[in-house]
Structures are given as C-alpha cells and as structure tokens.
Image 1 (cartoon, rainbow, N blue to C red):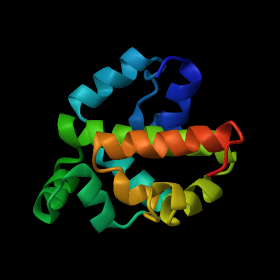
Image 2: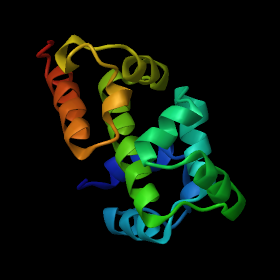
Image 3: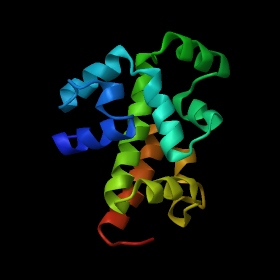
Length: 147
C-alpha cells in the first residue's frame, strides 16, 4: 500500500473514518491502528456491507466463536486479527477499484472463479498465499486479461 487513495479505500471498506478513526490518512497511520487493534465495529461493517457470514469471517480471521463474542464485548480485535481483517479489506478495496461498485465486488468475492480452481475468492483469503492469488486475478481483470 503506497498511496493515500489506497488507504482511503481500505478505511472505507472497514466502515470509514467514523469507525477506524479520522486520524488514519497514511499507510503508517493505518499500520499503527492495526497494531493497536481495529475496532470490532470494523469487522461488523465488512460483514454487513459485503454479505460475509460470521462463520466465513471467523475462518478468515482465525477467530473462534468464543473469541468472536469476547472481541465483541471488548469492542476491539487483537493485532493479529486486525492484520487479517486489514488484508481482507485491502483485497475488497482492490475489487472496488476494479469493479467500481461495492455490490459487484461483493458478488465477485462470493462467486466461484475458474482462475482460482472454481473456488470463491473469499474462501482463499485466510492465508497470505490465497490473498496473493486473488490479488493476481483482480490485477488481470483490471488490465483486461480475463481468465
């Protein structure tokens, strides 16, 4: 992540400045917020705006059902969980730039993709390797190389 526009896109996916914090304007600001733990409300914003089930999000964040409830009470995610949520939000923000419509992005992450072995992009986002695969497919779509 190199520019303020990308930061803005990720912050938007996470619920906007109201949720993440108005002071988050640079990659460094965002990294600091992730290290301190993102607000639980950011997780809720991603679930609601992109139609991601609690179970799918728990898998991606490596979060047990018990810890999900604990984080809800604490109103904050751990640094590791925040990093995984950031990674998910970064991919969704990339999809938003490619498709220019959050609704289309949501549809795309839930739709099996032949370039990803007929898997839903969302199911690959629990590992860094999977994130790279999904980013590569988005990059090919972005540059008009379908497939």
